[in-house]
Length: 171
Image 1 (spheres, rainbow, N blue to C red):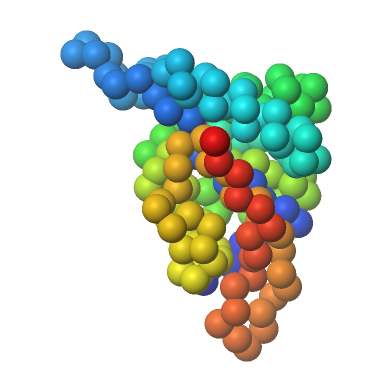
Image 2 (cartoon, rainbow, N blue to C red):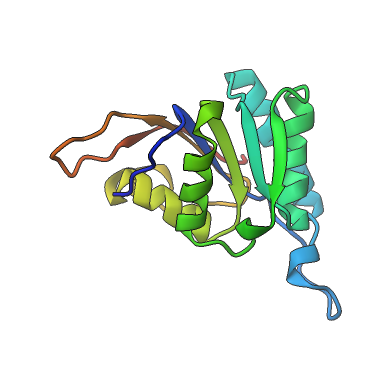
């Protein structure tokens, strides 16, 4: 298991919604959301609002599909959280997400909007394989979001320091 120190009290790990397939001249970075992706991002944002899942800070990859996914949450949540776009999140390894969480721990609740495999691997590192497999047995879906709450320091144990409070995915 990985630690984040200092850490926010709650972490939201969000994988961007479904993107269009790239056209021959399109860079992967520039792929926008598909129609389904736009709908799924809006649905997820509404479910976040209804559940009271309002982060204090949104950190999103600057890739187009992540920007659009994060923007759906930002608009639906009444532009309450601050939203920043991070170039380093594009094709990021888990350590990049973990470092960003530690650097922004003062926000108390932080949403990371990023890409697979980094988002999936970050969740696995924070909660362990059993909790991960219960939450997303078929992998981390597009427009899926894990809500993690800090579970204590786990001093002297291999216990995860984070619990999955909820996992939201498109219907």
